[in-house]
Image (cartoon, rainbow, N blue to C red; front, side, top):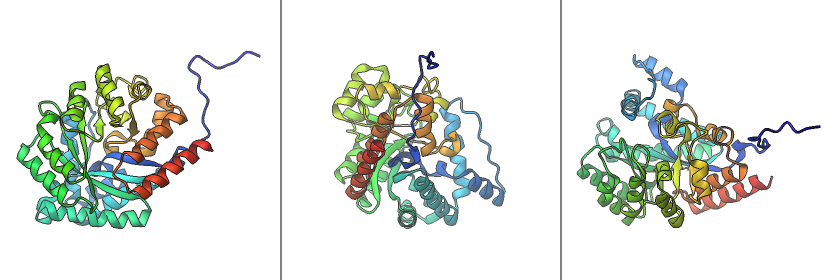
Length: 337
């Protein structure tokens, strides 16, 4: 009897992706809100929420800001944090590294410092309740002056060792080079924080190179446009700098033409370490587990590749050594199953 296997056939794995230990490293807190929670809160506060079609990052950025209207009350923010950690636990995460911007809530809490204290207090309680370790990455808005970035870096450094683990850089890359923020990242690095800027999403591989060589990034969020320059790919592989990749986000924002054409497999083949992440679930749809399933079914990653991405996410995170060791052992056990 002839085989029915086509040229692109791959065996279906019986391994359950929910059981694969993983860390979620590229997740913007506000956009992790559950759809049902958002619907409830917008109705309660007389607001309207409509997600427009994403044809450009500027639409995404404007839409994201509207989320803050329903999170302007501390009880709503606390609920968001708790539910986000609970959802991470359901998806099989052993660690969450939440990107937060305390300045968003400075008016509510009086200062950005007090807003950060609130985030940390609620995150600690949620971590204990749901059994998932949580670290916070303070986000710099690259469209604001460097002086603000320096202030953000100093605030992050003040809370190093108290739950803040990284300093990031977000918003529209175009016109705001990552290298401009090197002074802020030096403050973070001197305090023992991870340097985790967004780069190589809307701008090309030169921004990824600058993140690595100028800002000395520990991880690059997105970074997938490094694939356009073999020398930058080689740089990432040689230095072991991981990319925190968000496949669905990349497709919906036009960074990748389709899942089938996503550069993640090519990056892995070239020796670049990558993690898999959701970015903004309320805007793009998938959560962490969904993205792993997409990477398997839509991109075609093998279980070995998925396990490698999960291991990278754990090993390159701001998690404690205890969680890293337990997570790594869990990944090995998942592959051996």
